[in-house]
Image (cartoon, rainbow, N blue to C red; front, side, top):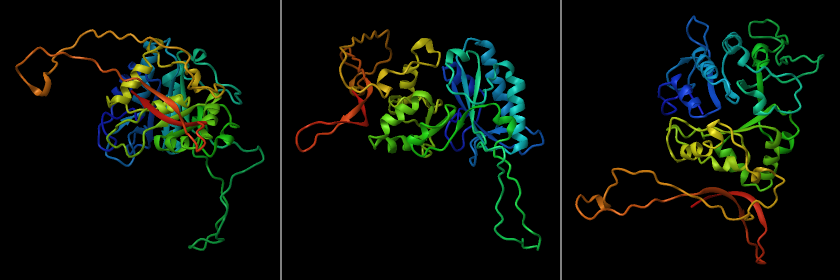
Length: 357
């Protein structure tokens, strides 16, 4: 989330080094907020809009990504999530930079895809997530309807074609098209390249309705979902990612510059599979798994403590006996809540609850 920031969301510095650090840490989805430049260089700038965060050139970020791909040609696909606030001239410059800098590493999607390719088919590729213009019929034109027949200066107000928000040059490169969520019944009928982004507050709200949970998991079978921190987290703190993971969400965006418990969970989760940035979803995140809470057998967890240093004595004491340290282990998971009705029966629901112990 806002990968370029080194600190808080309002006044911290932006740095290309944050992209290099995230990639080295195994992150495979990088966010880039693009704005028009106020200079004569025609180079889009990246920063957190309407704040005093510093600005860095879009070109330098793409060069950083290309350097990583060159050094790691077997990397699984990297997704660049573009939050695009640029006008058409700067969008065209973005498209030009992506094609010339990334070259063959840039994956250009084919129209009319029916299924998403496997990450294994996209080794060494960079994919673009953004927005594409709404499709229209060949004989359909988009016009601005004239409300007043005359303008204040007396000139006639005629209908004129409206330019799409995303220029064709950039739309052609966009693999994943961000679409506003309305309901999962409608979402499940969308193209496989259409996807939704949800704030952590939206995740919490949607999962309060048990009917949304299996529908969301079904949607995530052949679509992508992205979640991100609430706007109120101006200190760049993080939310617990486990709820989104339990729904099958593939992109759970976190503030990588903040080393809190959420990032510890993220690092631990993606340490699997050689730290490649991709792990298989557990079976419990698929809608056909009806009995998610059934115990399939005990799991033996072995932990080896390698070393410890500078352990304090209790209550800040300086003198006294040698301390007797111990290790506390917290196991995190998500469970489906169980409600008991007046008859004493326990019908299982799909409301997501946090379980940490």
